[in-house]
Length: 360
Image 1 (cartoon, rainbow, N blue to C red):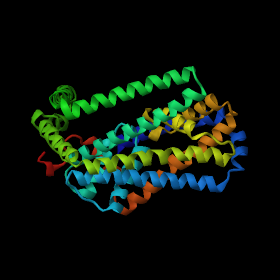
Image 2 (cartoon, one colour):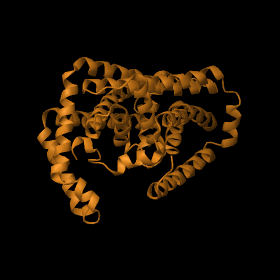
Image 3 (tube, one colour):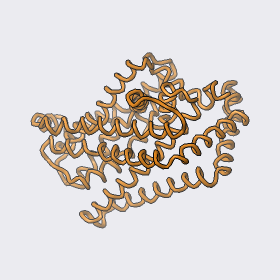
Image 4 (cartoon, helix red, strand yellow):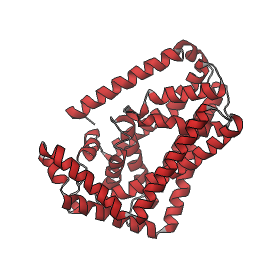
């Protein structure tokens, strides 16, 4: 699980940023007062939060596996879970993990299914798209609750704008993928030409991997996989249902964490806070570490008007379940599958066209 030097530098940089954000969080939300609140944490809700995360990961892994089956690939449920847990681990700990999460997950899936990287990437992006659509539905439910309980606030207005942007983005992606592939192909090849004409001047590997014929062949295989999945509507519907259950379960730990600390939150508000606060995972920190704590804590204070220490303690219990627990599961998956962090990083560094079985 060793890191190469470039990855180590990026990891240390983002880790330093996360540590600074966490220290700021502890200072602002009063670490001593939070420690006092944490002394009375109830064990039953705490355990329920961990079980909800395990259920969420199992649902997401099975949702991805159903898409894989529809594409013509095959993997056993337990091996599929290990692959998903490996990819989720990498997204949580590697620098820019969420930005590079798709190729990381595709690499992990391909290690088990052996269908070729580009086909695995298609499976993962379809699963990710389904997941985003599921979160949109839950976000709308959370916003609807806040509309009734806290009408006319600036926070609500910002959330409504965010929902509208996300809905427009998902609709645009769906239209391009299903009905305007020539436009999507043109955009991908255009980006490849740009990268080849700039970075390719300094790297022979980039120049080779972003050659038009290489990228074009990868795009064709990607579309072939999308068509195969699209033809199996039953598997897609099952995958959608599993994704919805998974994302709902993943919101539960905030509800159970609040109960564990002793200050219950309505589940409608939980959906709102988790959806809006999740935007912080996009910052260049491993799994949003530091940024998410600030975002969720601030939202709890803004919407519930509770004490900073209470909000902070709730967030710490919540992140223990949704961040540190999946990392622990991911480490176990790495050990079972024999995957290293170096190989996960290579899966991102070598995109596109890392897979010789695809003819690249």
